[in-house]
Image: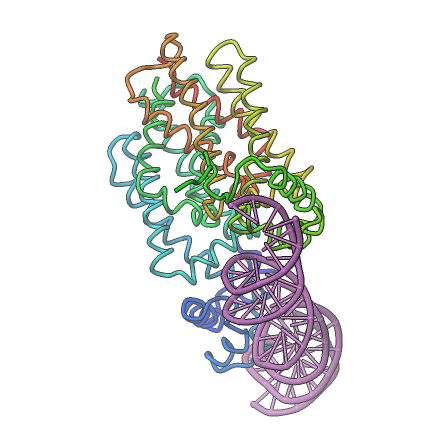
Length: 205
Length: 205
DNA sequence: GTTGTGACTATAACCCAAAATGGTCACTAG
DNA sequence: CTAGTGACCATTTTGGGTTATAGTCACAAC
């Protein structure tokens, strides 16, 4: 009834509370260092100087904490993508950068923060809200690019927008989805370029 | 020096030998029933009435046997695809059927012969020759379709053939590769159609 | 020579009790 | 009332002793 949750339904208690932030911060460090599985809720409790039980006043479950830091992690990718897209002039170039930056940032995360990446991959595999929201976010950015491209006469307008966007999203899926990206690391060098070319050809008016 | 192996480098001893065939047959049944892991080489030996040691006169390893039946399994998919493609009139339709049949047959295998499918997935994951050959084979069929489409003026001719084919193959990868297909089962309904549309748009002259 | 095997080893799989962990709840302190 | 916890339970996870398996080799029968 009086839940103070906005977009993250995995939270308990007050949404803005220093203890909640402390938990997330400690989780970020512990998960990054030791991984999600090797970190116990008691570890987090000890790190912030409270008891384990108190943590459950703020989070429904350990998974909810995992989702919080997963959201945080995926937000970094989104931020990098948004910046790259914003700095491009044409919709064509925006799409190229969207794809390229997305893959580059994800791969970088894979190699530099493997433990956090694994959470993201797990999240994608289990269909956690954090991963779904991420996918939706990328899709939304993509939609805007395609719409703009159509308005500017750069892209074709015959195919229904939803269909176009959905198909392109399917093409990007193996690289957007952290779970799938793992299996495509060997393709990561040229796939974005090659696929961008193909997609842009399909978008030609 | 005097190896009698043609395309499968995982064989020992004479390539055509009734015992080799017996091993493959027994392996097909056992792997299909109990799975690759739960089947021991001794099981296969018992099934054909020889000792385990004798099996190693024909196969380098258990994996080599696995590859043999994996090749067999993937050949069924290739056969189904070939037939579907042969029955299509235009290159456009050939491509649609290539993609659709490929996915449908793979999915069918997944649900009806899960144990064999798992071997194929494992094979793809480990980069076994059997899986690589399968990928090459699909790619080859794809190349022929695109080339024919170009010759008939149905597809554009500006992009280098290799590049076009490679990009399309990348698009199909999540559905060709049994390892990846597992994660895309929920997309299997409309992905082939949607992606075929996109690819064909990109191929438009 | 060819066909075939029992005996052997090093490694991987299995099993299961003991310990650790996620999660809850009644309760205390202020 | 709010902030916070120890004690508790049901499930997982783990350690490591034991068994099972992949693969080899010297040798036998013909």
